[in-house]
Length: 480
Image 1: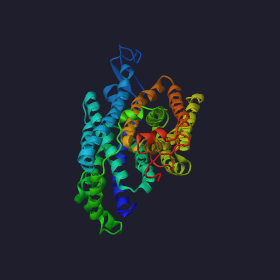
Image 2: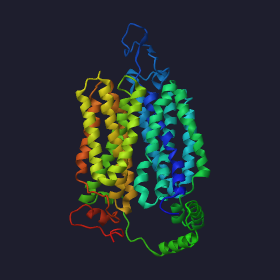
Image 3: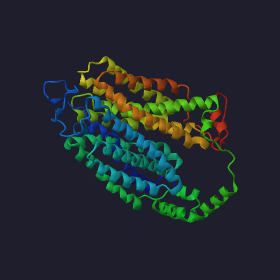
Image 4: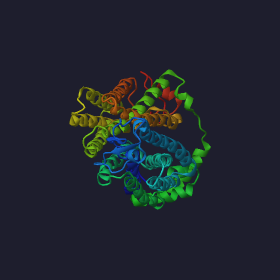
């Protein structure tokens, strides 16, 4: 079916649509729980956070209803708003794991369609939740489904795209997320009630049910599970659309299947191999920390921008708009500067930008927005970079496990992010300092990693251990 053709582009374009609801659900907390001014209404002469206060009065000039005003998530209960986002990120982590397992056993397409349907149903029902505990449960279910769409869709894209184009498509895959983030403040501007807003970002997923008919099963998965005939049908269709010959596809698959069956696996690895030797331990820990940085800083700075004050819609829109050029710049930087310099540069940009906020008056909103936007740009470069860098750094026999651990680390960072961003209510500079120092530490650690651009992928544990050491070469097929 070739490296890249009309069939590849059409299939990827259809799959990329699901990144819009991924962005909407992940970033929704910014407008579900925006900063709300309030005072004690009953009795009116006591402190608003006094235990004697029985009823609150909210300033509804911007938002008519939020989860804060719906369930009085203020004062001692304020942490509950951040808890909802932490549980959401935990749900994405659980969804990544569960749907990843199901996708390996059942194929890629059916779990993807199931995740889309669950995301649609739970997202819509969330808009009608009468109790906060039910709201949390439904958001968690939505998050698991969202995590499922993320992992299964990325795997399909990487399995159908030829090796020559995977670098580009691994970054282009993030662009619809950036566009979805940019559309979110537009939704919120016209829909000021959280229930209607939640419904509006959930119902578009009904279109994605068409994936059952539009998205093919991964021919690579079909082949590796012995379903040669089904794989051949999809590959022949793809080849026809790409105007390539189809005569030998089925026979080539049968021959490759017989050859693989006659060849035994000569090298296996497990997760503990990532930590057994000093060199592998160093590279694994550094990569894990940098994924944590991306999860913490990207989602944290995005939420922080919603709490700066001023025009929340403009603040979020500016930050989101700058993600797109950042992602496009990432392609150029990784191709021409390599993964190492790209990650160091982008982390440093975020770190310095956020630390500068500590020296800016909290009343200078435009400067804080500008510096935070620069921080978002840095993370929009770092996130796609760590995906590719990690995949190229870990040996093939433990690559999935290595990326899995890193993904968990990123989710842990994103779970902590809401609470760090929430510190801005009490300590203006503290979130900026935290979001600034962690990327700088990550950038410093990357200096200890080898460059992977243009290098053969390490296959065995021994390859992984020697990779990056001076005067050492890895013995892979790619290395010749």
